[in-house]
Amino acid sequence: VRWMMYWIVFALFMATETFTDLLISWFPFYYEVKMAFVLWLLSPYTRGASLLYRRFVHPTLARKEKDIDTFLVRTRERGYETMLHFGKRGLNLAATAAVQAATKSQGALAGRLRSFSMQDLRSIPDEG
Image 1 (cartoon, rainbow, N blue to C red):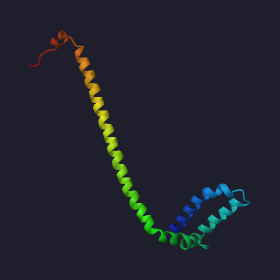
Image 2: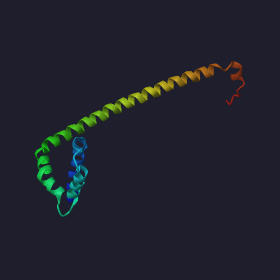
Image 3: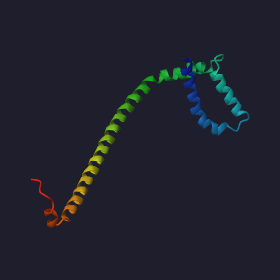
């Protein structure tokens, strides 16, 4: 549980740090403070990640639980519909390509057969 709290808090830190890094990286000792913060999160003595998770992350997730569940259900349904749509579209494209290849090959085969003369066909031994 301790590691789960750490990784959730660390992931949120990394996501926000991507944007704030551009704005406040010019402060003196910014990178040193950032490194000290990560060590504070990780340390088993300070339990910084557990503190932040229990104070801020868990209450926020608990308040938004119904919204998150609704969003996940909606996303699953849309994903299934999208998969069906693109699956049907892909099968239609494959079927069209197969029909076009078959018609082109039949035309080539007919042209090849027309090139034989009756003399060539009579020279083939009869097996019957």
